[in-house]
Length: 394
Picture (tube, rainbow, N blue to C red):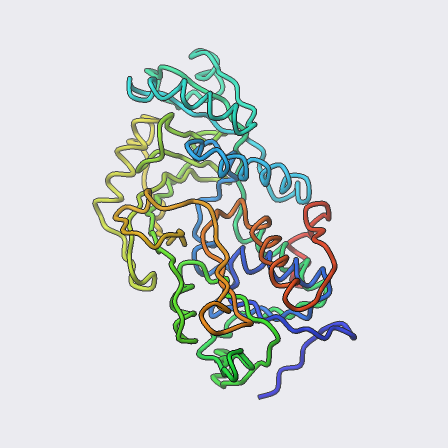
């Protein structure tokens, strides 16, 4: 089967990006903008893995202030994304709320670390907080206002991909990588199953990027390699009503059921965290749903009166080669794995990170690839407006 690429004339270095989540979409855009010939492969629909199942939080970085570098990274990308695509984000802000004495004891540490990370926050008094968000627990003991936001995950991914297409990238959903042709220590071609025609074909490549997140190790194994990714599922519960404007966070270190994100006509309570070997076999434990509702009610008592609209689970691609049981012990940062050290010179994987930091991850990955294939154009994605998501379909 012959696939004809709709690519600009003169592009000679071909990079195949595997994974149609937000990281793969941002990488495809960055590399295409620098002048590479890019083909993105996704085994399902766009965002059908972890990215499409996120709760939609534009991180202020405040959840991760225990690691100041990660917190700062999140906040700076939050600012960048608002600048290059203001139409994608609900700039509603967030509240970190102390409900009990344990939360209250965390406050001074939290404020200190926010200051170190350069994240602008503001303490509110109890009456002001309840005036802004009357569904908060009226027994709250302290509240801090932070620059969180929310978004529709699919719209963000489609904006990155629309921008990639403007620079000649070829986007192929429902095209699953099933193997590699490796010769003399390099990938010569990617073997692909086109699920729309049930035909297999080969796609020659100068470089291959594995941006499949929690599935990164499964893809790497097709080349006889491994990636130290820890798939960490988390259960989320969507309510049948929107109960607030600003994001509700528990003022404490990250834990189960400590956040309620409001967007469009719903509020989503998240999330649990555990570690699995295979992200394709994850189910939703009933006790996790019950825990989300219990913990959500502690933040906002109205939760107990509402019906559940939906429950869903997504697997975070956490970085970690050490033993972990809950996923909270594993790094929230990201890593690029150069498989040249394993004997395949034109192959790299990227794991970890957050949806909010996908553009930055793509910049670092594109820097890495560009150096190896001889592209000298710098990254411009931090200053270039993203194309609107609706233009992906034109």
